[in-house]
Length: 522
Image (cartoon, rainbow, N blue to C red):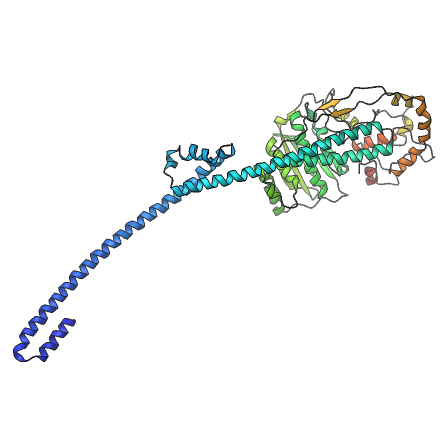
């Protein structure tokens, strides 16, 4: 257009003879310019087409690379890393894992260098974290074992004191409370060891009746007086599973008594189900909301998967974490539901592999509880053993009470008189004392004779009037209002019936809660 305009202007300005050449020159120039423009446009179009094709190929290549990276990343997350972490947990180093899994597999050999480096960095970080975690757990277990050794030594000394001062009600009652506190410290040490990955320290070589197992769990909590055993299946637990079950039930009982009103009872039943034995622990506390139940079950699941010490927080709640670890070790099933009493119901399913119907000579509760033989699994025979575990009787107590002793007990019905046993006959023979070795195995000391000389009789006679005052001071009813001293052994029989759960009728001037509170191990 520009050339055509210039040609027209030149033609108008020149004279007539020159107009024809100017027109031809303008036309030729216009044609040349148009031709050059067309050629240039075609060249530019071809260049743009080639560049577009190149860019399209580049985009396709990048998209393929991205898709390949996505595929490799997914394979790394779902296949490579889980397999590598499993090999790492069984003891292989990150270098060995890379050599045995990544380099040995043809499908992973062509893995991009960046992803290979990423896998190695992840494995190295996990290996360092696992090493730190194992070190912390070993430290926890080491501390727990030291505490257990101290508790064991203190318990042994307390038992010797109980044997030495067993005839003094005031001293023996104080020693029982100290011994019970020692048992609580031992349970805490066992909990720390379990969280560190160790198994419970105490071992039971012989089967133990389930009733005795639950009584042993009761004796390891502070408020054991509030626990009531209702219907317990007549089965026994194999020796290797006794201590884990005692510890798990003790933690659940402790939670039930801790998070429920102090005036309520905790009800325990054990019935046979298809998969084993179902132990139900129900309290009358605050019911679990859905959020709280989900949080508790999540804690159980985390503990079963291997809880990290950092997850316990600054104020750790060890109960559920310990139960989760024990349930993982011994294949127990633990669930939490709403209780019919308005609180929480914890259900523990004990598998049949942990049960036995044979003879159960072991005893898991009572003073000086050991695996000494019993003739059968009759529950009536277990009434002669008193909790807490690890304690000893100062002397044997006969279930047939003299009328003078039984008259002071609640719910006494007069029976035909029987000859009284002389006091010298009860004191003539020393009790059988049971000790525990450092490995947790029972060890019995030989039975010996402990005759009382005549020089002790005046001192005993002088101490006789002090017994009623001691009983009244400790809150025990002597059952005599005429000022006579209570018969020997009344305080021990009351303690025996209280901790064994023997039902006692309350008197007219006291309620049932008052009867439960008498003779407790406070």
